[in-house]
Amino acid sequence: MSVGEGTKIWHFSHVLPRSKIGARCNIGQNVVIGPDVSIGTNCNIQNNVSVYKGVTLEDGVFCGPSMVFTNVYNPRAGLRKMDQARPTLVKEGATLGANSTIICGVTIGKYAFVGAGALVHRDIPDYALVVGNPAKKIGYVCQCGERLLHDHKCPECGKTYNKTQEGLEPSPD
Image (tube, rainbow, N blue to C red; front, side, top):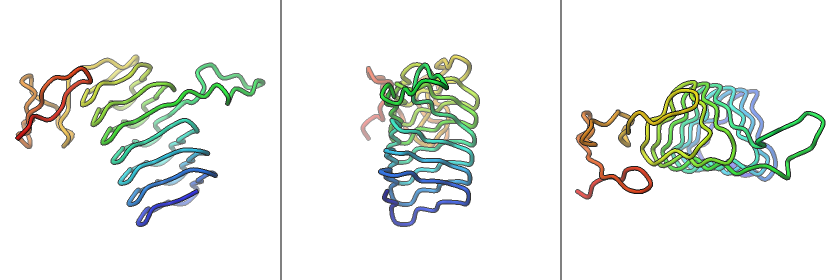
């Protein structure tokens, strides 16, 4: 286990063997990490979240209170299936809202925003805003977290974006 400089881990939380947590993260109370989990720098994991084996969080990921990751697609209490764990990747800057559920084996794109209570069972494009059960894309968000206008311009910071195969990308300045 390694924990980066400036990372805070609150009470009743557990970091299991072979897990790596980057610098300047905030790990809330009653959080379980690992084993074998990788968490980037500047991540914020709110209270009551379990980050299971197979989950990778890139830099700047926000995990809202009581959101859920799974790691085995079809678990059974009487059968050991950890050899079937499916990897889940949450890319840089993504937000996973409170009480959202991320089914194993998906990739959440850069700066994507998963609304509170959403059930994600498919890959989410970069900068996409998804809500509901199952999660559906209803638009896009800026790196600053604001919903983009139809022309892919942020009403808050003025940044503009271009469509790509992966979702959106910031327009060159």
